[in-house]
Amino acid sequence: MPYSITKSGVPIFDVARAYSLAAVLSYSDEDESTNPIISDTGSCFVIDFPKGKPSLAHLLQDAGWQGLFSIPNGLDPRNQAWGSLFVTDLSMAAKEKKVKQVQKQLEQGFDDLLMRAQAQGLIARFEGETLPGGLEPSAFKGSKSSTRAQYAESQTEVDKTNWALACLGGALAGRYVWQRRNIFAVYPIPERVHFINWQDIREKTYGERLSYLGVRNAVAHYSVVLAETMRQMAANSSSFSDSFSGLAYFSLFKTGNQWKPSSAGFLSLQPLIEMALGHTHESAKVFEVWEKLFRRGSVRGSEDLAEVLTNLIMSPSLESLEKHNRVLLRYIAGKEVKAMNQYTEDAIKEVMQIV
Amino acid sequence: LSKELAQLFSDDAIREMGNVLRTALRENNDYASLIELEYAESVPALAEALKKLLRRYDSFASHKKWSWRPATTSYEKVMFLATGQGLPIDQQENAVRLVRATLISHALTFTPFQAKSQKEETNA
Image 1 (cartoon, helix red, strand yellow):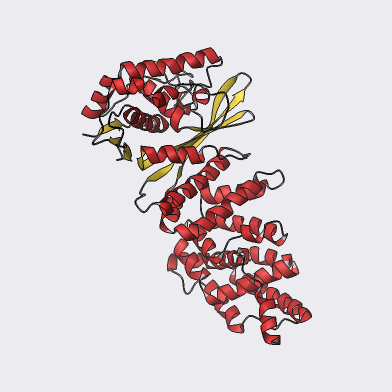
Image 2 (cartoon, rainbow over the protein chains, first blue to last red; image 1 turned 180 degrees about the vertical axis):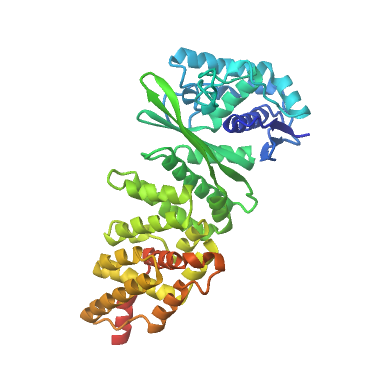
């Protein structure tokens, strides 16, 4: 019987719990040959684990599991993002305490967690532990809806099991890019993903970063990196069928000592994934050109290139295509883009497919 | 729009006029034609912009002693497409923008320089 996470309506919280439950199942599997599959069924995330034998004893002895709960020193996005997740806890001791609390909660509540996830789906109750703002921007305290009587609301709280699950998922699945006084966070939303493939994708893509104009630019660039990685995986394996539905993103900025939520949104990955998996040869050139243009656009003086490409990917339309064409053509006419970094006829036809 | 864009982009007349624009920009730095084309919002404005592009190209090609010129029918076909007659009804009002976008898209692509190679072929 599959395990499931009933969606609460708080998107990143739900996605993080799905990744986390898959991680718990994967690390606790005595058999070690099966691989959890995360699927989005609309109302819940289902984790298929048909032949798995999850056991607490195995989980406690697993070195990989123990390794998940260390706070790395560097800000490499490939590291577990505990530091970014608990960014609102200013001291390292407070962060470490919470990480230990997450581990303890998941290990002590292991049987109950799996039983509930298998029986009726894991449902979140919004009371108990404070959800970290670094995980979900809607968790920050403040007014969340219009009110005439009270102008402030407290932080969002969830029950301990779901809190621990979400925190682990946030540390694993969140791609946090620190840039000056900003943090850009991106979460890939699985449509149907093998957990082992996702670990591979994470390893290959989370470290790819540039200097960004803003969170939209960061998300657009990551979408290209992710689509290209999936294209390569599909080209190397005919059985590859994993897919992400989109990217949920938000940014935080620092005011004095405090972190505040900034913009947030969702990018549908469907056009890029279709391009990557449907036309693997032609899309290779498109992603190659886009990667080069993003790199060029991350340099001071060429920001317009990054901006028009970001707009084309984030909100594809005839208008954004025309703007992209105008700016790029000026760079090409000015001999500022090498021939090898320019579109071929087939590649630009693929670009038109997303408009 | 992707279907209409792809259909126009694959049209031979659009391809030929796109090649002229590419050559004019890359070999002759003809930014004037590019700007006129970018700001052409109506069929007469597009016709005027394309005529000027062709005139400038012709002058430059004569100076360089290139033999290749686009066929007259290409210009006529592009203008026919710009009236929206080959497009679905709901896209006819966008016809000029679609044609303009596909012409400029052709100019973006990298292909070996055609005029020179055809000149060499003619000389041979």
